[in-house]
Length: 324
Image (cartoon, rainbow, N blue to C red; front, side):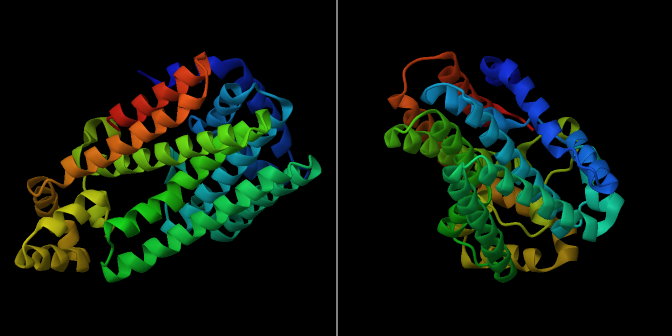
């Protein structure tokens, strides 16, 4: 299973999407044009636009508005990544220098704002008011999720319920929005739109939990990054939350003392990783992710069989079986 199995049913449409996206980003201001062309160089697999197109195909067929939805969600995603790099002080993005590493924070924030406003205006000009509502809600949720994570990380007081809310808002909301926009571009059937949104939400949760477990289990030779980064950065995820819930008070105090001290986190993260494995944190998180993956596939039951539906099922398998 690879990502080409997922994108194959919309491969031609994806080419057209990329042409339209590049054209929309052209700007007469030389600096804006230079930075946005660099943004295009940073583009990854563009899974969210793919999901818009697949969702549209499943729900009734790809239309011109489906491309607009794909463009809007990619503009929003790119804007959030640029802003995230500023907040995190990240100097690399997908193997090349980040926007803020080259043009500094002020330009980065403004370019992120520019991309977001470009998407909002694009939808207004096309009278895609439903898309505006979906995207505005996603931006709200993403912001609230980020703030809640910062709040809980500072106090080291994050429950499983808090964690699910954070990843639902930070990660799953945009994936759910992509699927909802795709469906809305193809049908007025509220049951189908809701089903696609449910698929995206569940897939997003499964994806993030799986991603968080890979920080403990991934092969650094394949990923190119060391394990235990979340612990080093004081990021408390589901495997650790579950392990702490099963530990004795003495073990809890020991782990929390490590998490509170940056030097200890750097030197003793291996001890915390062993603790998580020993307390069953990885097995538990894996089971929770599998549950959300099953929910995602079940949400597709309202749709007839098609290559696009098969691709969406394949995407769930791809998320759950990836190793990096």
